[in-house]
Structures are given as C-alpha cells and as structure tokens.
Length: 170
Ligand SMILES: [Zn+2]
Image 1: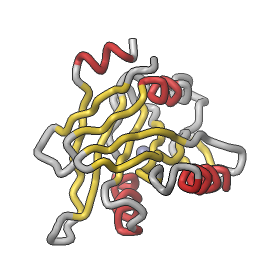
Image 2 (image 1 turned 135 degrees about the vertical axis):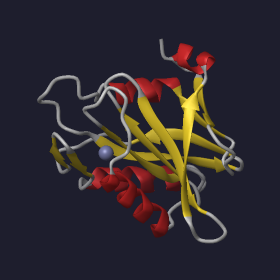
Image 3 (image 1 turned 45 degrees about the vertical axis):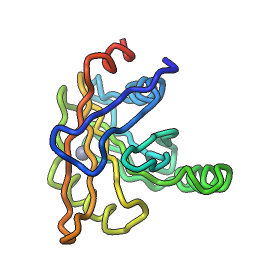
C-alpha cells in the first residue's frame, strides 16, 4: 500500500500524470456509499505540482461540521482548511491545495451538472493552476483534471488508471 498509483490522461493534457499513494485511495474507499443510508462524503485534495505531474500527498476527510446527505456534501468544517494551512506551512510552501473529492451512490460515477459547475468555480477561484477532482463510486472512481486554457476556456480531462496501478489497490 506504500506504492503510488499513477493516473494517466485519456486525451492530451498539460498534466501528463497524477501520482497518488495507494494508501490514500484505499482510505477514500472507506467512504464508499455502499448501503442506501450512507451519506455523501468528501474533502480536499492536497499535494505538489511538479510540472507536468501532480503529486498528491494528502486528503482531508469528512468532519462533524460538514453538510452531508444522500446526494449532497458541502465542505464546511474548518478542519479541512486548517489541514491545508498546516501542510503549506510545514512543507516549505510546497504542499498546497489541488482539488476536491467526494462520493456518489453509483457503481461507476460520473460528474453531475452541479459537480461541473462547482468545479468550474474551484478553477476560477485560482488556488491551483491545475485542479484534480475525484468521485469515489461503489465500484470504480472517476478522476479528472481541470484547468483554464490559454483562451480562458475551462477544460476537464478524464484520467484513468492502468492495470499495474490497479494492482496496487488489490
Ligand atoms: Zn457529485
């Protein structure tokens, strides 16, 4: 579980790969909405940009101050922001905000129109030039990187895991 999982873009993208510790993806799976009463969960994704790679090092987890229901997660608890500030200050300003993850009660999740709207806002807010979004489903997860291209058009690129990386999670 100490190995990194490598996510690769399905189309040509300025980000050539995303590296995530396998243990982090396993930790996210604990929040899968397996039963009909499990609420949505979510949190921040934190890491470094090593152009042309995104190197994920941390995620934050749901806390009591977040708003959660079957089809909604709103990150409200202050521990998310506090973790981001702590890591930024203790990493020589290298580990910063990279994006957001949340769960869906679907086997193979796809972003909703609400997700895409929210993600566009995240990109426009400009905390990271490249933003990573993960939706954890019941069987597979959805990964994408979004950014504002030169013509200011926000574009999302789907990423996928190769077989060797999938083995890390078994
Ligand atoms: Zn969603």
